[in-house]
Structure formats: structure tokens, C-alpha cells
Image (cartoon, rainbow, N blue to C red):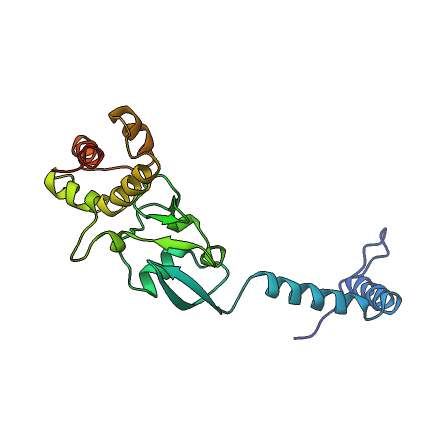
Length: 209
């Protein structure tokens, strides 16, 4: 298909071919004036962007429930992802994308933390404790008290509550009911078994049955 030159308007002196010819000349002049620096800068910017995106994995060591584990992580990998999908520790649950549910609570260096808001790489050199460490043949007093007081229904929030209660009572072994309620404020139970959870915590404070 031929590019026919449009007839000029008598009062304009303008043609499309002349405009394109002039634009091409201007672009060529700009390229000559700026040299290869622009292309190099664009390439460098792309390389920097690729680096910042954090693609690829690296091996780190995490100490979980007293045992060292070598895991491969991306810079964006959360502790929850590593626990569930690499170490097969599925007690912590991915209920929310922030810290509002408390279902993915773990203990990091003695403090209750949400595993889905922690980067795995930020946990190197720290002591991580999950709900799995509170069970087994000799379950922790908190887990036993939850059973005694029927403090679970669907059970989905239970691991986070058990861990949160353990962490709270480690710091406050003689806590009152009011203090327990305040201390567990970050955990949500959609089944509404809060009363039983409180009774379980109080049982541990009192020394169990």
C-alpha cells in the first residue's frame, strides 16, 4: 500500500511526509547529541530494578523448636511460608494477611509474633517456637488446660491461642482474669470460645487440676 502524499491546503503549506521527515531528522540529531549514555542508563536502571525485585533464593539457617534447619528462601518469603511449606509445621494458620487474627502466632525470642508478617530472613539467629513444641507425648500445661476446658470448637484458631497463652503466662505467671483478657486481645475466635480460653489460662495460673 503506497503512502500517498495528502494534498496541501492552500493556506497551510503542510504535508504529512514533510512532517515525518522533519521528525526523523530531529530524533537523529537528539541521538547524536546525547550519545550512547541514554541507552546505557536505561540498561543500568533495568539491571538495578531486577536486583531490587529479589528474584532467586538463598540458603539460611533457622532454629525452630530447638533444632537447626537449613531452608531456601526468597527475600520476600515469610516465616509462615517457610514453617508450613518447607518444615511441614502447619500449626500456625494463614487466616489473615496481617496480624488481626492471631492464628499464626509463634514465639520468637520469647515474644509472641505473627509469622505471616515476619520475613524468614529476619529470623536468622533467633529462637522460634511453634505450637508443635507444646504437644507430643508430654503436652504443655496450656495445651492440657485447653482440653480440660473444651476451649476449642472448629480448632482453627486454637494453635494461635495456645501459643499466645503460653507466651503471656511465661511473662505473667500469676496473671488475673482481667490481665489475661487484655493479654490475649490480639487473638480472634470466630466460634466464640473466649470464656473457655480464659478458664484454660486461669487453670494454668492456679497450677492445673
